[in-house]
Amino acid sequence: MQQIDVILGLQWGDEGKGKIVDYLATEYDMVARFQGGPNAGHTLKFGGNKYVLHTVPSGIFRENLLNLIGNGVVLDPVTFQRELRSLEQSGVDFSRRLFISRKAHLILPTHRWLDAASEAHKGKAKIGSTLKGIGPTYMDKTGRNGLRIGDIESPAFREQYETLKTKHLELLKIYAPVEFDLETAEREWFESLDTLRKLPMVDSEYFVNDAISSGKRVLAEGAQGSMLDIDFGTYPFVTSSNTVTAGVCTGLGVAPQRIGKVIGISKAYCTRVGSGPFPTEEDNETGELLRKEGMEFGATTGRPRRCGWIDLPQLRYTMLINGVTEICMTKIDVLNIFNEIAAATHYQYDGKTTTHLPFDLCQTEVAPLLKKYKGWNCSLDDVRSFEQLPTEAREYLEDLENLLGVPFNMISTGPEREKLIIR
Ligand code: GDP
Ligand code: IMO
Ligand code: MG
Image 1 (cartoon, rainbow, N blue to C red):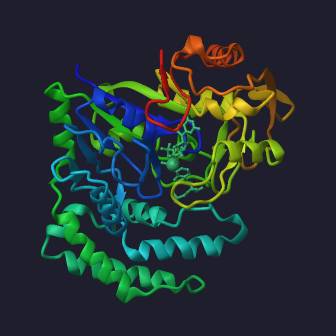
Image 2 (cartoon, rainbow, N blue to C red; image 1 turned 180 degrees about the vertical axis):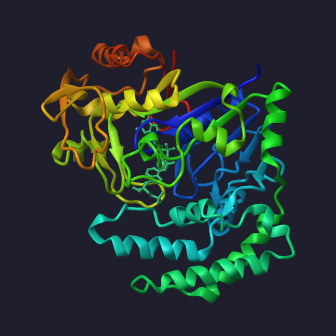
């Protein structure tokens, strides 16, 4: 049976998914985003330039390849338009290779303000949301109030918009006031819908299944990471969608037996941006070194990312939930400067040493058990194969591979497209 392969993040996001999707895209006929929205920031580097994609799939720079924004995505037409303009400026002709699902949901300006109001209301307990309106839009989707891309073609669209907006404005009165300029935002939003109308809207469940059935190779691109999944992440410090493999089925309309390879992306260490538990966080000099060396600042919000060592119980958990068939380890070069590297092999809590995650990482004080490795203290700039890696780097990776039990088929040694070891 023809299948769809999946690339997704195994940690708290920003694992380097964009780079790997862009690299692998040449092996595929279509790249399809299945969830999330402009909270994502996927960075691609090639030809001396850097590009950050938020809603557009990371296959967009490859000619002869279709890109699909699936039904599981939430789309803000204003940020989307900005993204398209910047692609145009880079000379990318997306007009015949970017498709949008009619069933994807629209982010309204009022969704963004509700996001801001809700976060302000939570005070110290705030999620650390990117404030792109993601949570409120998915709430309207599951609450059966949302507006979908396909609705913009309906004569009743304006009325549907007014109804939802009015409800939002009422809701906003519950919260402490947030500042907004409704008139300007609304004008901009409706103008941006015209850009949307110029792109092909499709019944994506047919579009993607027809492609798979006719032998086209399809790659599903995840956003965020599995620890931000609404069901399996560090709830409530999560995003509002299913970021795991199951999200491919609901976010594109493909059946579970169609899922082929599941390529999990993990950094050789670990980061998280926003609030919430992070057992291996190094809130100290080590963390600062990782941040500086890894340039760990959010691609969407610019916020500094929290940094720490790789967490194997956490990775085992997300490998399990996702059915990971292989791992791509990224940012191994960031560890070049360390004399000693560590990895958490177990957690200690409630008087036991275990590899299981507790029910609630927010409520359970977990002490990670760290295994130490010798660093390699040299640049990986000229390394082109696994065998060329310094002995210590190979030992570190091989030990992690043994402990996790899946092959590391790709090792990324720098942000640029070509800095990738394929085994
Ligand atoms: P994504 O959201 O998973 O696509 O990841 P982001 O783009 O948010 O963050 C990954 C960051 O690391 C970006 O700045 C990438 O350019 C960069 N990056 C990706 N792979 C590597 C790598 O192997 N080494 C280094 N040093 N940087 C990398
Ligand atoms: P990519 O695809 C890292 C985090 C936010 C916040 C929480 C909820 O680039 O890996 P939301 O805006 O969804 O309400 O925020 O999730 N978050 C991400 N962190 N990478 C992302 O995407 C993220 N998208 C959301 O920081 O903690
Ligand atoms: Mg990112």
